[in-house]
Length: 236
Image (cartoon, rainbow, N blue to C red):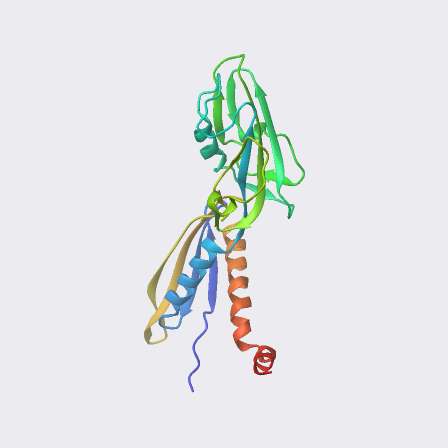
């Protein structure tokens, strides 16, 4: 009986930007380009561990619709900018980062106090601008690891300090992922597939590492279907 041909070539074409790469897998048995591409894309977008801001507390502010004296943006816009903060978190527990800036200047992610449990990968991120030398911005964010999307509606019972503003957290480190399947030849047979995936991350993980992690997730799930020990346990 003819076996399903496995791909013999897997390559990553890295762009000048280390967060972008093109994955090519070939030759794939007819139809398997779409099968692999769709499965990898879904896992990349939904199941990889990342880090995000989940809450913020700003001195003198009670809720997100407030304004801060001598600060250009209102609290809501500042919260939206904080959602763009990308980082690596080396702790399994939530970590608090503090930022305190005085005087007229542009406030960036680089102004956060250093913390050994967190590495900010986009320190150039502009958060807001203090418009007067008398102005001050004093805030503390909570960051943590997670997967997928964590809306504030799911945390209504969470106990927080007065003045803490909850933020919808997008943990996935994948910014964009798309794929296409093009025909390729194996000998005289022309209906094999070549899978081409464009992957862009947020800089906290390389595209190759992201694909490897996604593949491990799929392997762990599929291995359950071929594990005879599980079959015997279910029968008993």
